[in-house]
Length: 576
Image (cartoon, rainbow, N blue to C red; front, side, top):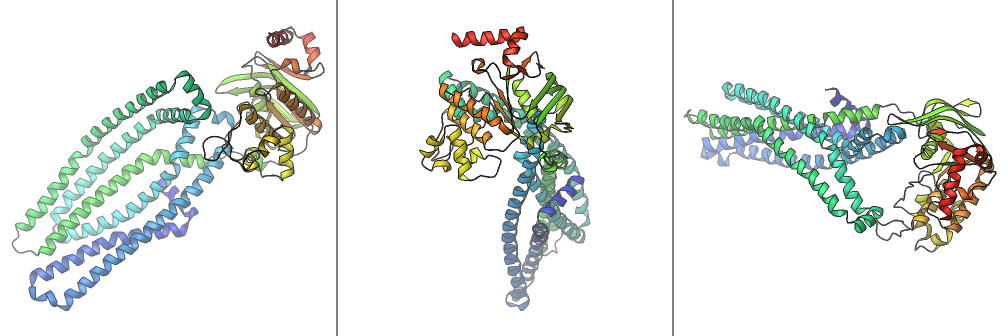
């Protein structure tokens, strides 16, 4: 009941007008068919009792009212159809905006957990439809309650013996349908992982990067086998649900037939009855049974969605802090971390972090693959919270790492290739800047000539998913990701292997640009090209999960045997 009240409150916040109009129209649509049954009963009785009444004024009046009721039902139906369609769009719009905003408030460490991702996917995929289903449930309850109430009053007047079996059938069916709905949701919940896996496999087949390797290595057949294996599990589940439902609710269908037969026998045993009364009683009984079935189906559907509805409102009611909105940025010149550690999925990935990063400097992060370099970048930009230790901006303690999102700009190693135009790729999450700034950042990364050669220049859609789009090479996509990072005014710039896909000339150009960027900011670069480091460069060396404080490259070679060996191996690999 609480979930229904919560949903109604949510719907009223979206549109009171649409909600109350839906309720009024539902009441009208439930009463009008019952009025039509009553009017038809009168028409048939008038005709059957006395043929001379065929031309009577009373009969014409009843027919006229009946015709008006039919037209009114048609008009109400069309208005209700338009209203509910419009209301559904409003629900989807409001829900999507609210949910996506909430998703963006999640911390990266939370989002990287499989259970959280499954929940987010369920809510994003089915959340708005669940709200809409609950709206339909409320309207169906109103409609069917009116039908059931009027039907019971009618049955009492005709034959009180009918009332008891009708009530017993309804009560029995309610319990059985609820059992079926619970079982249905349990199976849907268990299928979440397989459905996510199937979606991912389909995505791989239609995604540009993976498609190449699937073609080369012949991986399509393997993926098809995995998809079929998951779908075969769905077939097995559906078969089980069918027999479970038949076992639980099949007897209810038999009871319905028995009741209709009873009505026919009851009237036929009474020699003095009106044909209109017989037809009306059968129609009313069918209406009662239909309303019972409809109400039970609505309850079943609602019970199937109830747990998801709980997830939806728990997620909507969560109080994640949006640091970007709640925090007022202050200028700073230094970031420090003392005795810090970073944890992800219950595993410590970095520990004993001791860092002092100052404005006007470029810092190169080096270490073996898997050492935690990218995790350090995520920590410095505010995506990961410190598990232990303290972070300072100058002398001020950072209470929540997400504050750093106000100051940071990042180029990730696994950067996003947006299937949008060039402008949207550069200003992905920010307001567009003037053409001078756009031209400057494109020129800095060496993409201005390429972009100017495109059919619609910077308004050309990139990628392969849409028509009239143009794809870029891997190196060009990487430079566009760097341009995205450069376009933002930030205090700390973080680059995760910015030259990994670049030719020699482009590597030198990009590193030169990033060095100049440090004039009024802090620049941190994950770097695997040891030979590009200068003797005086500042280095953050990560080894065995331990983040050593900043040291000079040449001095570190002399003082740290492990680092010296790391540099030597890098040089040997380069020369070989």
